[in-house]
Length: 271
Length: 271
Image 1: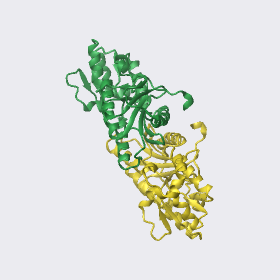
Image 2: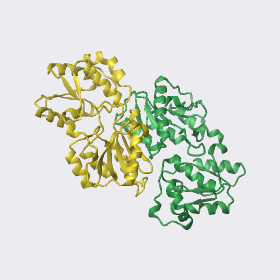
Image 3: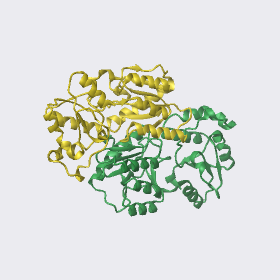
Image 4: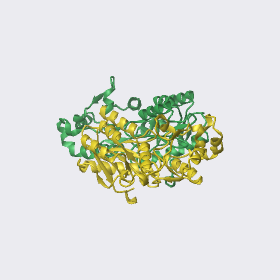
């Protein structure tokens, strides 16, 4: 789990981590860690908590998959004061939302760090993490998926695309990669994907994306989901994507017969 | 059901319709009509049948959602002769596949007609088919969805996109509009879409698309599916989209409180 890995690393570096759980993060247990769990109506209170602890640096983990409906809640006073700012922020894709959230922190003197500043070893390098061969039809599928994924990214829509060498199979909207792969598994079980039609998952860095948040990422559970969907391998933008627990991911992928490939950033000419 | 409406119209025009059922079309009953149902292994036989009946014009209805796996079947002799041609055809999106299929017929002297040549009244006109108001946030959602849908179309990926004024919700891959709307209904029931977040469905004509096949289309069942997904309205490219049974669709949409809007084709500047 990325936030806990980050907290552990920060602690090992001699820092005093403080976890702020919002949205999906509130469903997890943070026992044993200094933390606070904030419903949307009290998100404005976060700055008081940070000030009290003298927090000067913050790392974002994950994205905000639900747009809070501030109209239908009773906001706390600090949240109420921020409402105009909050309304403006929720208009746009994940990229523009996170960028706006980062500005809110920066304006209040808190520095926004990237995950990879603390854990540079999570950045996917160029090349194959496994010894599973990438053959010609995989390469054609990767190219096809990459173009679509980068296009989606430019529109700040989604990061992930599944494609075969012949066609695009599925595109990620707000549902996330796990549900995208469930859909592909279902299409395959209903024979909507040909038996010999090798598919790859591509997760792309959005060209205009801020390196400090929501990089394309995979973990061991992504490998299991991709395997269940009959995916031949996973490709991501090298040096701009995260592999959480890289050794475990490489081992799991290799055991399942999936490649994990870091590919060079696309030149504009190919778009 | 579009193929039967086409057949009925052709009959009314004094022609002698002959229905060739392939792929999904084979699951329906064509009783009472001169027809043939062809498995992929025998698709090459279609020309014999057309020749025997002196068929000179053909109308395509629907698309080919599964890429046949010619490698794993025992093809008939006429299919076998076409294999190299067939292999080439199955590489690409729906648009390129249908274009290739059309060429196969044209090369053999059969003219490929559009649905709207026979039934011009199915073309969606510019403007609102209903008296359900399109308000400012709907317009913003339509604009957002349209840009994404046309971009998808340019890449020959899909036609349909669901968006709110704030963000893109879901994109159509090979699963089709029905399953796209089921996904949106599910996201809404899990509160991944805000209660006040009005969403629209946009189905776009692909700029490079051949007007003779697979135009964006909706029917009464689309209205029911959109209603179940909590969609505020449907927009499509005017004069380049089909509304099957337009009066029934308008009545159903109005009863459900959904608008059905034909919008002007996008100028390139907005892409």
